[in-house]
Amino acid sequence: MPVYAVARIDELADGQMKQVKAGDTDLLLVRLDGQFYALGARCTHYGAPLATGVLHGERIICPWHHACFHARTGAHLEPPGLDHLPTFPVRVEGEQVLVELAEAVEGRRTPQLGQRDPQDARTCVVIGAGCAGAYAVEALRTQGFTGQVVWMTNGEFPPIDRPNLSKEYLAGEAPEAWMPLRDPDFYKAADIEIIPQAVKMLDAAARTVTLANGEQLRYEVAVVAPGARPRRLAVPGAELPGIFMLRTIEDSRAIRMAAAQAHRAVVVGASFIGMEVAQSLRHLGLAVTVVAPETVPFERTLGGEVGRVLQTLHEAHGVTFRLGHTVQAFEGTDRVQQVVLDNGDRLPADLVVVGIGVQPATDFMQGVQKAPDGSILVDAYLQAADGLFVAGDAARFPDWRTGRPIRIEHWRLAAQHGRLAGANAAGARQPYQGVPFFWTRQFGVSLQYLGYVETWDEVVLDGDPSARKFLACYLRGDQVWAVAGMGRGYEMARLHALLLETPLPTVDTVWQWLSRT
Image (cartoon, rainbow, N blue to C red; front, side):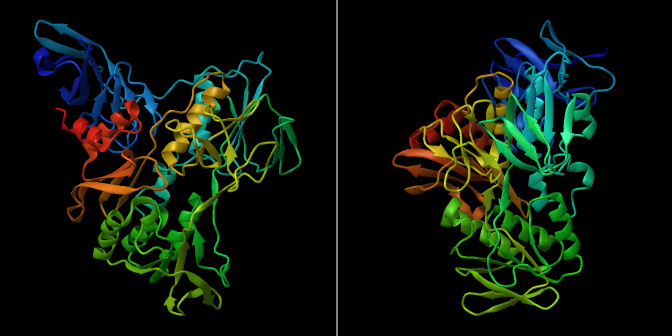
């Protein structure tokens, strides 16, 4: 294999990384404990240059969406993404760092999943074809579960990159080929049995699953990740054609098809889904009005000042807001034509998208403890009952910082949960101690959010929100429970590392951490 000199040994100190060239190939060179490691230069999720991220111990944190990789082995440690980084042989000769490289270099390594052992009579049932289910079935096989794996997908297969449904895919910028997380043949090769039917009932005490056709299956262990269903508006006219909710790829396709024949759209709800849909519909050329009861978008999640930044961004791109109002009815003959507000105003609409939150889809589960919202109470290992693990939007789990049960509706957290639940179902005993992270990108501007807090005492800002370059720390008492950032991606990746070490730092600790070179 060709050998390339990629750096001098004095170009990197211990604990540093940089992007280098080996011929025409970009590599990430890392130095740890005097040893050099060469890996793929780009994140296996969306291709971010990892050299602009953060090296924290042996963990590489991607600057875009905070996927994490092992700096020595390239192993994928935290979602998003599923694949490992490729690694390449390194040696030092004199003052030069040399890397061996094959003629054809792949940008990722797909995990090698184990297969079923016919002598293993155990059955693991996985329910739900979202990202939590996808991560769970992979974790089962990579952790050595050799029994039968039955994946019940309710017709939603293969699992998809769901965050794109309201963004690039809805806007017509992401082709169909981008959407599946894996090719169906990947699961076939790992002896994962796909059952497309819906589940009618799961009985945790009996360890049985009953399908919609009446067939019953007994399991030794199960991972339940059914996600959540969108909340419906219970107002007159809500069933008119032209009114949509967004959960599946079929929903996104239907909205895009309807948008091709529409001129005016109303989005009900100023949540992340609602605002991302508003952006995508504007990209498709529609006049868009957002209706929500809040006085500012994202007010309950991000606070007024940060919410106004995103509202101003949308208004600069032609989105109209009717905030402080609710929808009382939809009117139309054959399809929706008007949206009636609580003050009697009528908004003309050819298309309506409703995004007012979700409800855990757990009605089919019996023999488990449920919270008032229908979510399933689990322990730190995501276990709800003997042999039963619950992941994602359906799980109410202990916040490892406080022990208090919480539920978080984040795609990345669902992926974290899925991988952990699958590993624990295979026999591991690992508690959830991750850092929640989500992101949104609207009109070319990205906002990132680390941690979790339901309510806060104050928001401490660093930077200029009007310039869309700031950090916002959400405090309870003197502790930082969450941080939002715009235009500060490197610092957000550094704060991810801090929150792994110090889950509830003070503001002074945050600024001191960021001031380190």
